[in-house]
Length: 169
Image 1 (cartoon, rainbow, N blue to C red):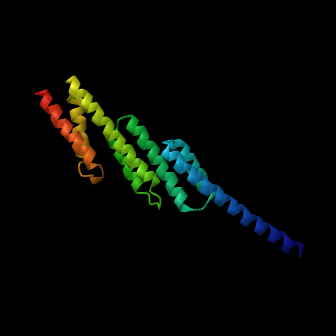
Image 2 (image 1 turned 180 degrees about the vertical axis):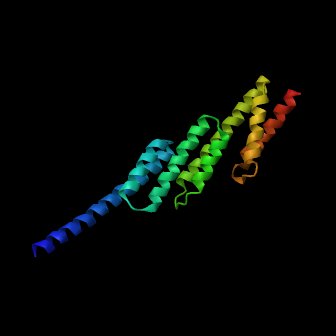
Image 3 (image 1 turned 90 degrees about the vertical axis):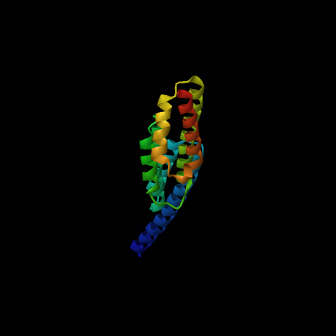
C-alpha cells in the first residue's frame, strides 16, 4: 500500500512539475517575442533556448533555430555581406513554425539594410564618387531583383543607381 501511495505522489509531482515547466517555457517565448521587437536578438535566443529545454514543444525548437539565423543575419548586415544575409534568411524561412515573429523581423532587417544602402547611395551621389555603390546596387539587383517582398526598396536603389551612373558621365 505504501508503494502505491509513493508512486501516486511521484506521478502527481511529475504532472505538476511538467505543468510548471510548460508555463516557464510559454513565458520565455512571450519574453523572447518582446526581446525581438526590441532587437535584442541574443537575449531572445537565450529565452527560446530555455523554452526549448523546458518543453517538448517542437515549435519552441523551431523558433530557437530561427533566432540563431536572425542573429547571423544581423552580423552579416553589420559586415555588409549581402550574400550571407540572404543565405541566412533563406535558411530561417526553411524552418517551419506557426509564429511569424522572427520571419517578420528578418524581413524588417533586410529592409533596414536596403534603406542604409539607399542613404549611402544618396550621399555618394552628392559627393561624386559612386563607383563602389553602383556595383553594390547591381549586386543587390542581381540577387534580389525578383523578390516581390522587397520590390519598392530595390526599385528605389535602381533609380539611384541610374542617377549615379548619369553623374559619372
